[in-house]
Length: 302
Ligand code: ASN
Image 1 (cartoon, rainbow, N blue to C red):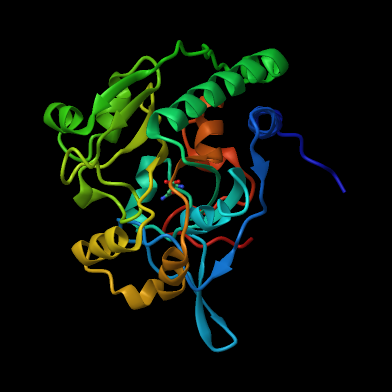
Image 2: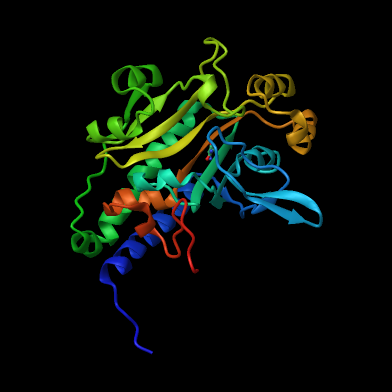
């Protein structure tokens, strides 16, 4: 057998390996415990945008392939105070999303959640994590970055925070690509309107219809990196949010039963590992950041 040597691919996967190693080490140093992913469950993230499919016949009951582990993260915090997980997510996005170069039907997010934390707390974790990952890649993957022609700097923190309304006023909606193209350093977008996000992100008690949540935007047009926020954790508020989103509570019965028994207040986020690799390695398309990539709308042999 003749093995083909693809130096660029090796460089990208080496950088990705370093990103995984550095982020896991950073989180463990900071008191987080890694939990293993859930792949199948009667409940998963409803998401706010349309994805389709993903149901599996599980002994005659429809189970979902995980779209994100958000609901399980909340439940896991009853056992452990700070958790993270390299969580495979399946999101069959509409085919037209492939043009953006940042969607994969199957990807991994580094998903974390902290009991009794505020948005500011997890923003600080996100910034330190990003700085640590970039420092580690610069230290250990100089040759790989050089081979890929990528120059990347460690961002200075705290990163800028841009209110959602401001980004919308300046760039319209969706603003991800346009905003990201103007940034020289990663920046947060904060305070999303309730109507554009899922029921689990917490509404600001002092500002109706505004959420205590955030996205991180990469600079140079790489687009969205991460989503997260503080969470709703009481039954009446979650039921109200589901009603506002026209979600039948029956769909989330098992989750709501657990919420009724009590889940902790928390905040957290999930950062896409392939998108982070794409940004750090400076790749045109996210599918170059993993093996066996599945782009929206296309079927693959493997
Ligand atoms: N993981 C995200 C979060 O923690 C949710 C998502 O990916 N939709 O908020």
